Image (tube, rainbow, N blue to C red; front, side, top):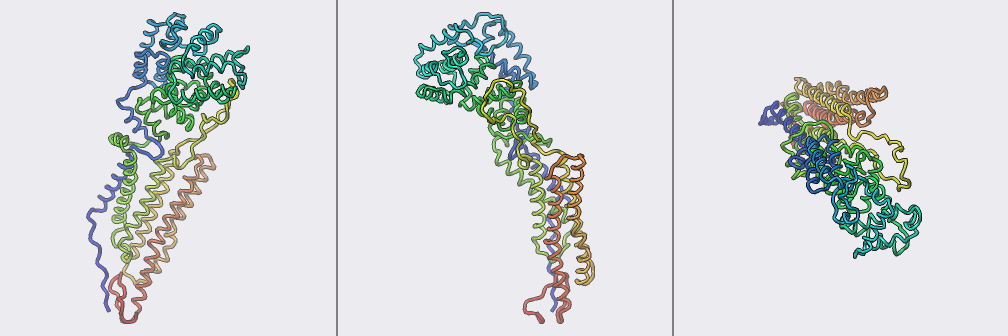
Amino acid sequence: MSVSSPPRSPSPAFPAPLLVVLGLVLATAAWMLPVNLKSVSPALLRAAGQGTPSLGAYGRDLVDVEKIGPAALVLAAAKATGDPRAPALDAALELFAARQPGLMAWGGWDPFLDPLFNLRADSGRRSSLPVLTFFNTLRARQTLRTYLGRSGSEGVQAFLQLREITGTGRFVPATRPGGQPLDALLLLTGLLYEGKHLSAPLQRELRGLAETAVKNKELGELETVFINLLSLGRRLDWGQMVELTRRTDSTKTLGEYAHLARVAPDQLPLIYAAALFSDSADRVAAYLIEFGKAGLEDLTLALKHGQGAVRQLLLRQVPVNRHPTPALGAAAELALLHPQLLLAAKYLGVLLGVWLALRGLDRWLVGPGSVASLPGTFGHMKAGVLSVLFALLVLAVTEPFLLQAAPVSEFQIRRPVLVFANLAAAPETPTSASTMEATNLISIAVFAALQVAVYLLCLRKIREIALQDVPPLVKLRLMENEENLFDLGLYVGIGGTAAAMVLITLGVAKANLLAAFSSNLFGITCVALVKIRHVRPFKRQLILQGQIAAAPGIEATGPAAVPVRGSAGL
């Protein structure tokens, strides 16, 4: 019985080269979308900051409302970030100092303090003073205590009652010799409470701690709060302290800011300006405690782009992906509005683009009909597997924070603060890079490209054997003769890993096991695809064709001939 070969599939709708180009364009466009899974791109920060106030403009607004102390720290941050409006802000502060010289030491006007300290009196200073400096004298504390004693606030009265407590821990009791620091801190806290300069959550928490301390006749948790206030009160003037506590929602954040002021005093203007810019000291402190010095660099980058960039970075609480990749700026606005939707479109676009490119290469280089007896959907299967692998590679390149553990933050609070000195002498902990080195990314891409070349070479060889005009059993022997070629992916993979390890040992390349062993992984994947999905089914086809050709009464007229159910001899 004669069995004809199955009809060939119709020619594709798109020419193979056009399919390759279309796939590459789609994958590249999707890769350039400025959205990431565990990081934020600089292009997205630029778009978020566009049209929002810069540090210089924000500081100028502070001067207009007579908040001179905060404006001075914002000016320092503007100079550090190279804001072009910093000179205008500097000139505005100089002009204000000429008109109101007395207010410069306090950092601005306050109607509660003016009757007590005569804020407008010219002390000859043209810069701010730490707020606790004004509470050094006994007369200043007595004046302030008398003023607060007339307050009708129960919270203020609770703080004043703490002055009689002797269970003060590391502080000397306020009524004893040497108790001036605690006395000044009690008055400072009461003054902030009386003037409504605390955020509502922080005010409730402090009042609860004060009432508990009065009941237990010991400071308890307030001791740590006062230590943190001591650190901030020695660095911030009154106006700066007020603006910070208005944006702080817990004593935990207050402690974190005091910790940051101690471990990074030179960066305090940037940290302070970020709290004002974002209107949330809590988010700034959480971000810096989590990411350390690298997070401070990312925050500085956001400060350069404007208020919107800072708020976007702190809202997401992820690091900045500084890997130099081009980005489609036109899609940044959409990424801000619908980040999850654009992220899904990015990786689906990469997957589809790579699949189209691989399908085009398969039709172009290997050609249709290379293995005629394989199922019709097999060509799609091999491109699908490779496209998933390449999409994962793109994910690894664009999302380096998924593959490496975050380094230990230099700003992490590891133990309670026990001393106030010798903090600058602590040794710095070396940290590893938070992103993958460019050489490692290039090596991974080279290893993947080599395996794709080996894969296509094997398919061409299978096609060459399939199209030869020889009996099926001869084709089977030729396939067995090419076993070493079909194992070439393993040899290349092992060779790539060995070469990478040698370069790491010699110090030519930095140690990165992911880059080194990716060559082996790609090699195993390539050989598995070739042998399981191509060689084995083709050999099975050749064995069946050889048996059919040898069976009496059956004529195989095509390379894909199959026996018909019920035929003689079957």
